[in-house]
Length: 475
Image (cartoon, rainbow, N blue to C red; front, side):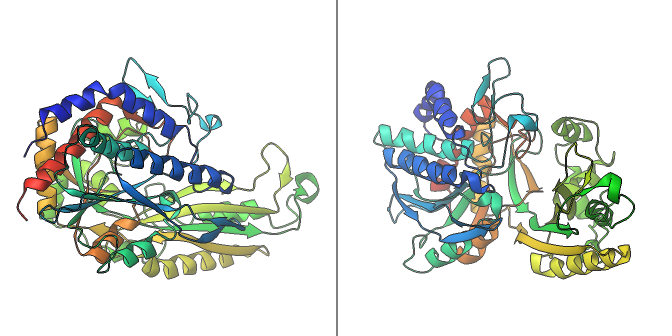
């Protein structure tokens, strides 16, 4: 069942209003991984809760407790639960999103202030941290609900919202909430399916539906030695240096070609057969696409299938950061840390990979013969997830995509992680759909993150049309 023409026109005619609301959201630096910004994540929760109430959503802020981050005891941001509609003759869809963002600073290489939404009038691109991941998509849902609220029209389905502020830092506290509210009589009782808009098209041309996500296992490795920084002129080549040990240790994790060097990690994954390889060969994707999205001609291979499988089907290990260095000072740092993560695919789990990682690090460090001390922290993790893309939930999304974009969507597995996806699937026992709004070149987690204006508006139409198709489709 197509969405009403009046709804589609409403989205277009209110474009400026919707972009202004996105700008207000982006202006709140809700960085969950930085203790100094916890107050901003809390402010973002209050702001979003107010926006939902204004358009008729009954909400509640759920206290998720406290946690420790970098040695500091902090309140976890509350989850926002919302509901609109209780018609038992209609399906009920649970919508998930997150209102926290990755760190961002002009000094990182942004062309504009990351927390001031900048509209490029020539390209129609909306630059700002969280514009695509995930504030834009959340507000897309609000755009849909606002149309029905202002026009006093019933939604074609009942909606439950579950919005969190810790997705970028492991979703602390959310799994327990979802499990608790999924039982009979809980907030999510009666949910028929789940929809998440927190992923991306495979390219910049073809809309997509996502039926699989990689999991993650994230580590921090610290090497400590002397009680204070040392003068390199006085102590160079006379003591074991923590930075030298760390660089040596990190170099044992992954090859320049992307092969994981930790014994047993790659061996967990069975080779793809020809039928599966044909799925990747048929996707609307090229090496040019990945290099355009990356901003440089740096693809690991000219083989499209190999690159796609590296992104979607195989585990990967990335080194993210080294901290504790002395910048321009010529000293030997007393303590340094490196951070890396492994993106996981079935049948891998954080628990199955962790012993392999720890054994590798301990053996590699022992091989250095260093007198420094090694400490390893497993910061957070999430299991991978794959679902059935032939389910009626996906069929509704396919029809909606065809109606809005005039073409069938790519069916893909995504390389990133959304920790709560598997929790929803297992706790509720229902199908979970990932319905992307943004494009492959949006730069989520990177500098100059953007959301195209066309994707924001057409994506809002897609979310609304999906609800209409969902209401009409037979289970």
